[in-house]
Image (spheres, rainbow, N blue to C red):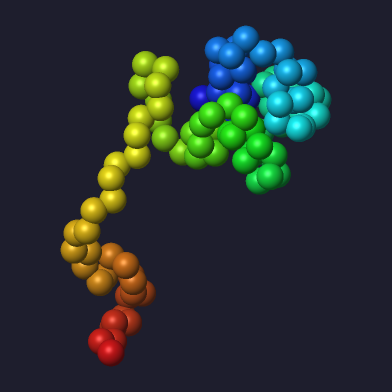
Length: 101
């Protein structure tokens, strides 16, 4: 799902117009329109933070870091401690050995 689709859906859930969202987030309405109409798909990190905060979601959710299921964002997997082979962290080129310090 495109960032603009997420913004549009969240805005509609709140019953806000593009103007209202822009006012609440302290952004230009034209930016909201360009995002929702998929004319623009990138934005400045500060604008992303303002939109996420205003809409009550994470910036990760807005930019699509996590897949969705039945209209709800899927929670990211919990990060736990597990062993990873050194070769997975530091791949080597053929013919090169990994030195142990």
